[in-house]
Image (cartoon, rainbow, N blue to C red):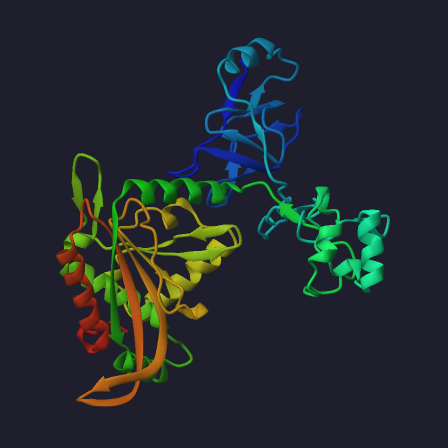
Length: 418
């Protein structure tokens, strides 16, 4: 008897998927465990194994198209079996698959290429700002042309106020010599691409976070002089291995969360969850947007282990190879834009967390120490808090704990901490 295979839910946030590639075609014999297709979710492109034996009788979602979770993906059965009634019954009330952005087929041991932008040119004259050119000539009234010739005015420098940008007599009379000669027609152009699954989810989740959770922000500045010295000493002792400032921040945040457990929490509607474990989500920029792989039990890991894990997770994220266990379960999130020269910013809370920490770059500037102005290195961070869970004093206490740990790293570096 024929059986339906439905679009699987491959992540906690997945509502629809794109079939990036079919590895089987209608009529093929398939065994349980065979890779049936590659499905693009909001976070990764994942191989989908068949859990049935039989002949592939029907493909419900063509390659490159989008379909909701639980829609008909394929039908298996005996060769030649009539599945008309089965499909008719299954399609009742089922939303139709929607066209998706073009998805490149994934080559073996490689990552599926991102959708290729399809250029869309929309030539459109700019009324009342630039002259309209038709067949190589500027559009102007005969009177305007004669007057421009008398005055020695180049029509290409005149902004037309008439219909469709046509130059009129008053435009010539009011011309003051501004503007620049035009080398050719000025056209407005744009490119449009279909929204990726990842970008759809980012838009939905962050919009829900921003407009549901009442955000407030706390900014503090750290003296990073000791952190710089300690990092240099550690890197000299573990060469050729290295730790980054981001690794130190993750470790310090994890320790500060253990000291301030109310920040390591989640709003669950009718209750608040205070997490005793510390799983740090680390925002990673990828081609289509942002992924947040998770460093689990970060408070108990040495710096080198944190650094190695973050690099491995970031590589997987960029290659869209993260597995659900590697992006789920965060209790707190860090977003670091310091490496891009950003001094200070605010971030939107990453659900289900109650807080997210936005980290700016280390800046060299004059500071006051012992009453004297001396060269210094400072770093600003901003904590975004969900006011339903975390109050101002609670967030401030966390930031002060973090300040102590980063301004004197020895406080977080016990035996085996490197």
